[in-house]
Length: 316
Image 1 (cartoon, rainbow, N blue to C red):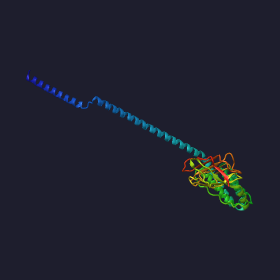
Image 2 (image 1 turned 180 degrees about the vertical axis):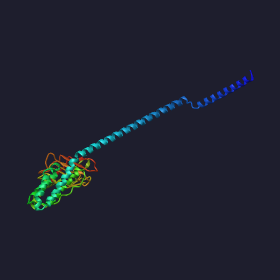
Image 3 (image 1 turned 90 degrees about the vertical axis):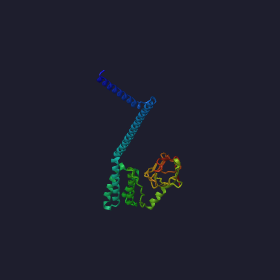
Image 4 (image 1 turned 30 degrees about the vertical axis):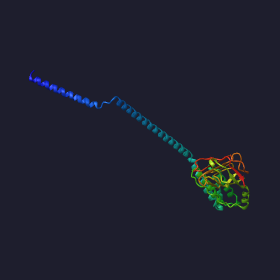
């Protein structure tokens, strides 16, 4: 073997030995990161659990977003329906406001007109009272208009026409307060200055009844509660009714006042409402004693209606 061949062989062996050492080092380095069988199962389970948690959280987020969207959609629909209802009633409410303001203005003009203008003022009042106003008025306004009109057309009427005009305006105020949900307090009627004879006749037909009864949840009427009834018309003239539990007081005539149903709507001292109904008997020539068919009480602090099955009137 020549010297050159020996040198080449030595170099080859050195290189081979270097490669073997490098491969041994690599195997040692990689071996550090090779997991045991137990560790492999652990990390597999861990990654599976994390994946499941991620999917669950994602699903919950999707459900919450769906429910929020559904709630928002339902709220939007409710608002749209409410606005549609308001829009549908808007023309009627506007006419109700216009006609009430107009009749109150014409009544005041007629009450203060001199003899030369009274006829024309009465014609204008009657055109509105007997025409467009009848579409939007309630029973209370109709009663006030009839009383005002009868006095205006009767030269011998001793009542104060201006006071009757004010009382008509007060009735319009109650009607508009209910229509527009303004919760305005009811104002007392002015004294119309009736004659002694008419006052005596009225006193004979207006009778005071004591009111008793208990409502659900322990609410009850105070033993001193009373109501005055016009036995000729069956209407409630005034009241002094108190709820013992809340101390709420109802006075004056009810906003809704017929010969079978009285409703003090938001007229209580605490903003509450009281409802007395007798759908079997009329309050005309009422003798009392029998329980009313319907009796209910509501006040803001209570939040819901309580009813009574034993509310009754007793003539004093």
